[in-house]
Length: 556
Image (tube, rainbow, N blue to C red):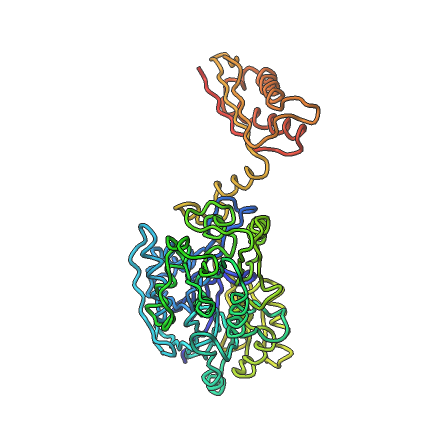
């Protein structure tokens, strides 16, 4: 008798962290599984810990090795942490991609704007539609979120049905799009759900997330009472917020000027998909200066403190077309993603120093999360009634709180896992049955580097302790031909006694070479290693930090 198919779940990103989402479902035997990927996103580099790294994405070595078994990639929605790695990683995998119209259109606009990006076909699925992807039947169930056309995925298999929630919330009055489809989710619960793989982002917050309609009212009230120019910054992909801002501007008799390429791209796609029907055309940044201060509203990118985005340039007074003055107002209709606090704070302080009024969600309801709080999580569980719940999309605390809530709500089986765990969902008891390769790739300029790449590790060290470059020439007897060349980069000029550190290093290099046995002086590698150790020790003694040290030995 044939053994029944085994259904597995392996997160390669997005568990124990927020961002970089990639989930892999498997169906079949231990030796032959069909694999379905859900989402392929990025997180963003942290200048403090990853200097020079723009994006972080999941390592897909496991999927590359299993490429012949990878039947497709299904996208829940068009946020960067869910689809931002496709352009870089699709060439390694070349699997079919499935998404609804807005997600597909926004992806194509992004791809077209990226120089050298490959052609990547996407099969468009209607919202609420069902498709077969290999042995998986996937239904796109509409959910409310902070972007159009977010969907939970009902993944039906011979081993049972999984509800992969993606990002969602319960919003009965979204500004655009459909509310979370309670009726369909209840019907799914009636059919029977083996496992719920669920968003944990707000699992530590009690109550419910307010509605986008409430935010629209608050923004309209703030814009109405403004006297000077108004700038609003938000996530470019939050089309409901863009529409709310446009309606607030119209009510206050202001023209909307769009500032920033990402915002322009989303506006174009939103219009094509009908999400800005009834809203007049926005003006480009060139027209900003043509309007009186009380007749213009600038819709800006840069809510996360991105240094090259519109708001940072405006705050630094180096934007060529858009300026703000004392008495003007900036509305931050966004939350600060963890890791971006310093960058956002620098922009806010720069604006405040210019006498500009700052409005945030600390004092006005100008932003709400697109993720469910605890009452919404309980409601989803009551609709779907899963046999098993696995929290994802959150840091360790979020996952643990979601798991605790699920147990209290009566879910029969609850388990947590980590990136790289291979989890058996069924048949039989759920369990971690193995590990698959997982890790991170860094987008470094035009290159993708593994997380242990020398360049990344060394740049981190450089940012902490600088570098000493030493060049010296030896003759065939191992004697110094001339004084060594010393160049200290990122190292203080003088020590605590006022002595020039470079002079001290020069003395150490000369004495180290002269004290080496003559036979070792004829070995350039041995000389370089001895000098390297001595220089690092000398600088550490004077500064308390050991720089990187590069030694070049020339024999003449």
